[in-house]
Every structure is written in structure tokens, then in C-alpha cells.
Length: 203
Image 1 (cartoon, rainbow, N blue to C red):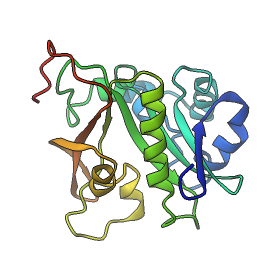
Image 2: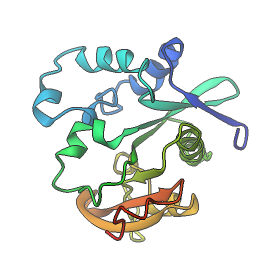
Image 3: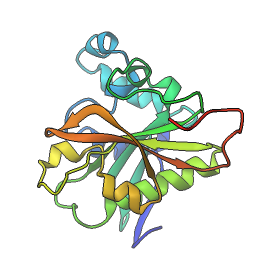
Image 4: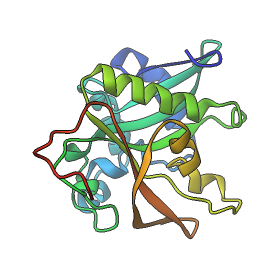
């Protein structure tokens, strides 16, 4: 619970609330599937395919995301997963894998229209950190945009901002070749457990 906002795993019984956030018209329409498939397979999901895939994924461990509630109403979503299972990230040329350390990845935030600027995205990020740590993850990654002082389009900030991640304790590892609204996206990390000395994490 952060500032009256509660964050919980998106499990099968919460499907109506997931659909209320992720499935709203005009909110990208990908049902949080973009990073979970290769480009070709994502394109082949077809009408209704993304919705069906997400509903099935709610039974996964870990689930594909977290939900934020304010006064009992669903108001936000954070998409996450084990990086090695996120096929587009596995194959990405713009957001590289920097070492062999097993990581979880935070890939998106959705805040319900009319609910922005209430700390919901930050509460979701804090919830993701707490959930990943409790689940035994040793390292958490995000790929937020650095506005560099500019005012960005709302849609460009679906990955979060570098300042939000830094405030949550993440550190910058490298500037990626990915861009949002022509601004750079950074690979940022938070170590949840001491790194294995046998693994090079200097990247």
C-alpha cells in the first residue's frame, strides 16, 4: 500500500480488472503482448489473439503484470516478466542483454485516463520491486525514457521515466539504441540480492 494505492499480482480471478485497464480502446491495443512474442509471432496473433494470450498468461508464475487499485477501483497496470521469456527482448538489437545474470524486466505502465499525476506509476514500480524480491528475483531491469528536460507525449512514457526509476533505487547501466518520442531509453537495474561473483555485471 503506497499513498492509498494498493498493488497486487494480476491473477486469473482479476481478469475483469485487467481487461478494464489493458483493454481500454486507444491504449495501444497490444494487451501487453508486444515484448512477449517475436515480431512475427506478435503479428500473427490476429484479432482477439492478444486478449486471449494475456488471459491465459494470468495463470503463469510470475504473472504477466501487477494491478494498482485506488479506493477499490483498478487504476493502473505494470507489465513485467522474466527477461529470458520475453521473446522480443531476447532478440532485441536496441535493448541488449548486458550479461548472463538472470533478470526480471519491467516493460510497461498503463495508468487509467483521469488518474495520472497521482503517483500510480510510482506505486506500481515500488510494487514490482517488492513483488520481484519476494518471489526470489535477484535483479530487476527497466527500460525507461530520459526526457532530457523536454515535455514528452503521454504515449511515449509508457515505459516510465529515468527519474522515476532512479527515485526507486535503480541505476543506469547503458543508454540503449531504443527511443521514445526521439529521446533515449536507458537500461536501468536494481540488484535485489548480492550479485554472483562468477558473473561479470560490469556491462
